[in-house]
Image (cartoon, rainbow, N blue to C red):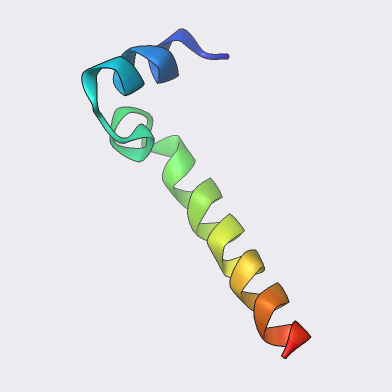
Length: 41
């Protein structure tokens, strides 16, 4: 685990604010989840 993630968590800072590179990763993940849920009907 990245120490910066732990430090941000301990301070109550959202991961995507502490490490903006993760914002797109989580956005893409949310999109894939939404598509999978929609596909299941």
